Image 1 (cartoon, rainbow, N blue to C red):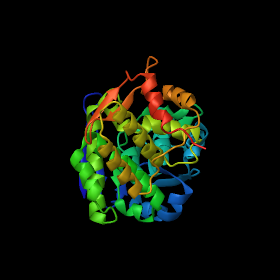
Image 2: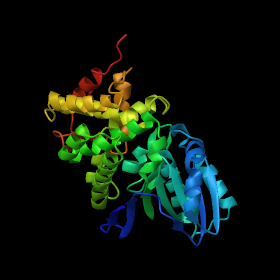
Image 3: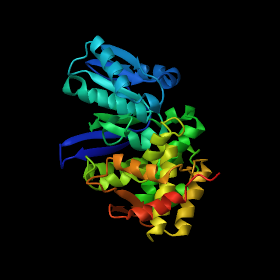
Length: 351
């Protein structure tokens, strides 16, 4: 069992543990609701409920998929929570991937102005990234995660055995989020991943632990993304536009991030921050997991305009998170439009 502490002393004096290992028995003296989706429920709900000891436990099931990450779904969750007469001492358990974690956490943050929740992530993406750090929220027509709150869980339980049932494509999407941290923060970790056999349980557990430790270190420094935490959005500025243009139905989030990293790397090369050889190492790694590395842009100006809906943009300036070599990063809001357009043009759809 590995325990990785989160301590947000600088802003809110919040602390909690991320527990990596077999899901332990959990005892609660209050009402508990588990928010999940049909896929996770059919595979794992019996295992979870066997470990929960509480006077009242109910399961709220919401549809599976990014397209359901909406205020309408949040309202449906809240309706059930009110029906079960949860009070301010009740607990929400987010049991699923990043979509479930974001929605369950957001619902907990606004139910009676905030009740406790814990994260039990079941996908690789949510285990290495989405469940750690307290970002919650939903999408709308204007973009991804534009409605939400920073709301920290009371604990995160990461049990890698849940990944045994994860489809190959979902696993790869998690690898994309894992490697984004290595590229921007830890050259040695990237080299580890290049050589790692992630089918090996112990190697995978090591990779998850290193990812979570990186994320925890960053969140401890910057809970609400006013500085260094924004670096974790490497690949996301481009990737969120890809997701928005395809209505969140074509690509998994991690797949869009993979495309976004390749786009960001192309811009980094244009600025002399990344060599062609380093950029190719990233492409080679992503392709090893059958992750997409190209997106056919239909209209460069439209794609560019979508950047301004990104939460990191301010005062009509777009903030780009770019690698500075493998293992380094820069944040730039002064890149000329022509330079960005040139990068986007290299992805234009060809007939």
